[in-house]
Image (tube, rainbow, N blue to C red; front, side):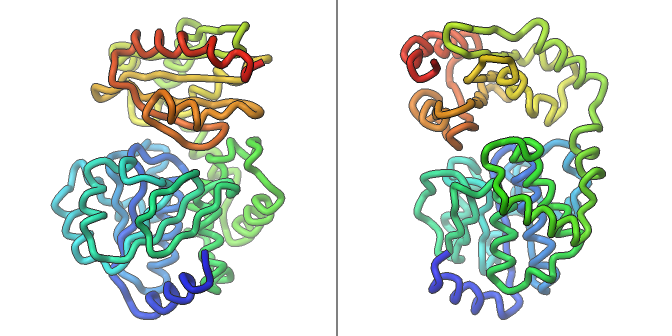
Length: 336
């Protein structure tokens, strides 16, 4: 963040403000961890804070401190709109385009309140008065920690804030195994543990609370639905809405499935396609230099990071998979 922006933000936050925090559609661990981490920090500073999500998020994130204060725009649209209308500052976390919050984006852009963008995805839209943007950060939670540090309150991070931020850093780094994990990431995590985040409990709440249906769905994905293309070092998994229904799908049940496609020895490109809510959602992961952000932007109305991205498809599931398979020969050299 530029020095002039930081100075203005500090001045703005000297008084008690109505603040709205917004994160992206289908929030994940980093989205909710950063949103509720910032919520708990600003509430500690006596601001009146509202967190709004465009839609629901997985049940394994419902334990996060402040979860009971979140407004789901898809369910409580009028309540969310009133909060935005009263806002004196709007914080947009873990997304770089208003398309990522769908219908909620119109109300955010219509608001005269200054916007604070906190994000680590490339190519952010130019809508914010204050920008804390760094594509080298492991997660948006890491950047929320940086913001608290810049505001001179690092020592005020307590257990609720630390637990939220630890959750987002842990999930967005794949439990600290992705190449976005830096020495600074580990130093921040150490401070969060010292501040009260109980690392083994948080890991258990995120990864060890699976339902029987979710585990059976994962087994079905690996045994019946995975296709491997050795010549292109690629693997994909796809699921139809009927298959989700067969396994009593709940929000979050397919979280992380794409990583299993990438876990095969020799595979550099993993893809996951799922039919949900009348749309085809795409998730891409890669190893090394293959840029799935560019791939998603070019072919699937999406984007993200070099090694982790997503998008959407307007055609059917089978047609989407066929389209993907047809693109692979064009990327053969890049995937070698």
